[in-house]
Image (cartoon, rainbow, N blue to C red; front, top):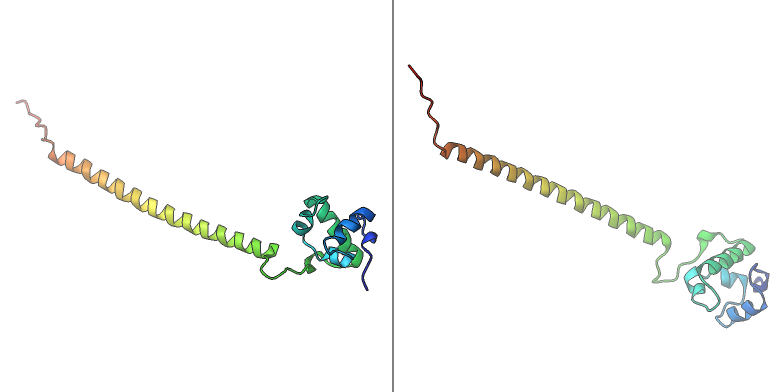
Length: 132
């Protein structure tokens, strides 16, 4: 049993015809759509698409999280995992760079100390004369 699309708040007769042109005939069809898919239809933007999809889901009693993800498409959860993985990888990379730069800084300071020591040792020593 399908719920008539005109029962969805925000969907009037003209919008129902427009959606029917895109193979969306019932509230169930509308609830199964993704915001981006609906926003691609003339007369919809992401805000309106989200509102009517949510209204359709509430009308039919579907949970927002139960939206099927078509094959080859990523869900928000998958995208969040990818973002977290990238952040972690970047963090590790930065750690390695910091370690490397601190090692290089230590080498430089050691070299600088050695060169200062060499300069000191190569300079002629000043004689202090003792007056008798």
